[in-house]
Length: 199
Image (spheres, rainbow, N blue to C red):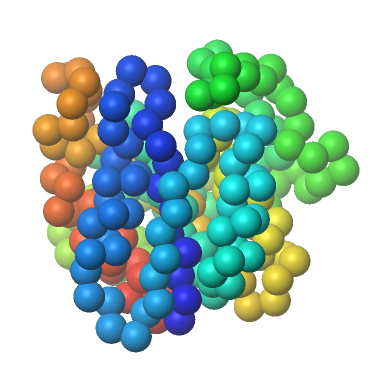
């Protein structure tokens, strides 16, 4: 099984992004017969789709697992749906601030993952790691990337995609003390569990 695991570059006031830190650690683990590739995605509404499509073209994965950083909660969030909308009060790393802009004026209003997210949540929780199913990936670059991944799922027979939001990790520099976090080891284990469950 070929898996493309993506994480994002840092954005905002933080100099690290939990999604990329976890992706790098998963890549260091032994995953048996799984052929894993990791790619860093730009926090850019305008560039992220092209970067993802290029990565898919080079790696030809069976599964795209995309990781993103969520500043709320202390659970691993399995995202069910991507919306055809871009909206943010905070600009991306290119300075672009969309105001209720469609990703694709001719595209579907929403796209859903075909992966068994309830089974994946159960597998994560069996490791004593908090996990929830989320019905909104937001309208920032995470959602933009997920919409593109699910469009690729439709275009390429056999390809499946899932977006996973991760909370801040314990000890992450610049994170406010009142924010809830999870150990980096637990977050890494959650992603490995997802991969092993899908294999």
